[in-house]
Image (cartoon, rainbow, N blue to C red; front, side, top):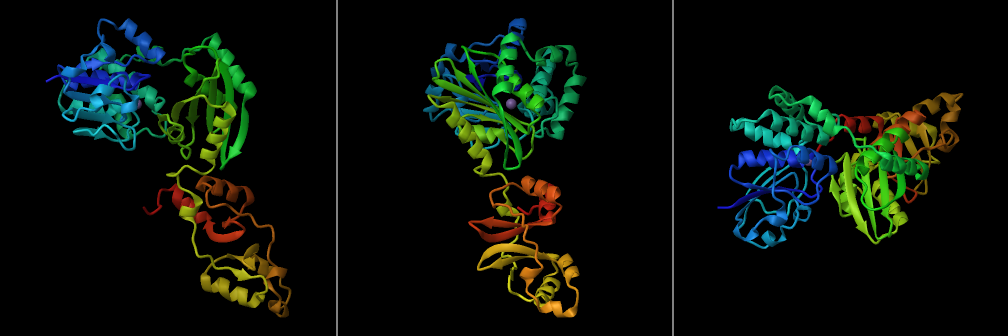
Length: 433
Ligand SMILES: [Mn+2]
């Protein structure tokens, strides 16, 4: 039986750590490293050559392989030069991954959970099987764990990630080494690009999110663009930042996204562009495209096509009780009491024209006025929201205008209503499934 373990191209520390962990879990397996690995991982490997020296996937005789172990990715297309294995129906595949979503690897065994770092899943198994982890391995594992969880600050981080970090420190992971490899490589090239991003970037408010999109031309391969995008996000103080890096020949555009906001999943956006990533970080490479078109695509995706994100239409109540503009105030008062609400939208021939709340009754000077129509007392300054917007934008809007309910309007028609408590219930995860 010939086993190989492998991971995704553009190998990062979590992927390398998981690869090394897999060689411990599958003794005798050969670790096959993709050709493209991240620069900081490359420098780690060159220093640790005596300890972690792996053949590249291209050097492996695939005919003899009957067992493939894949770590830190769940897609064939992210593997390097293993397409020959794809067609083999006798191939046994083990999958260890922390990315949510469907896999096309048809695994025989799989350990897939959405932890902050994949190494967390692998360390759990090593611990369970009482397999020894050396201080050097613990150091590599901790670098992977910190890199993928942003030092345990990314929102995808689970308690188990933090517990794993503690476990690795117990096993003598070396924090000086961790710092050395995690500190960004930031040279003059990166500085130029950061300045270019800051100069070209436009800040926008899309769907309640503060978005920064910057563009820069790059010559050849520039390392650590992801770090530049993160720096840009922090300096520009936006919820999410995107760097659009167009190659000199204009034949390809590399998109790197970073999100610091729980409600905005850049991994999902990058997936729609043919790339991939996590909620907090992702990238995609697009060939022969116009950068402005890419920018528009990203904005459209943020605007409302994020299929799995919760939208106002999921939270709103409907049908909505409405008042006709001609309804006498006395009737309106009865309805408000009956429905137990503090306000109701007012419509005229189906169109939203105002909102009547309990406090509007204070303006009635005497009993006779109760026969006057609602439209004389309603407030016509109605703030509304569209069904595709996010709960966050509704909440921000309510806070800004100090209002407790927002009619949900589509094509001039009121299709629902969303209240302060609807949005709060969502934020506290009380939304029924
Ligand atoms: Mn990972």
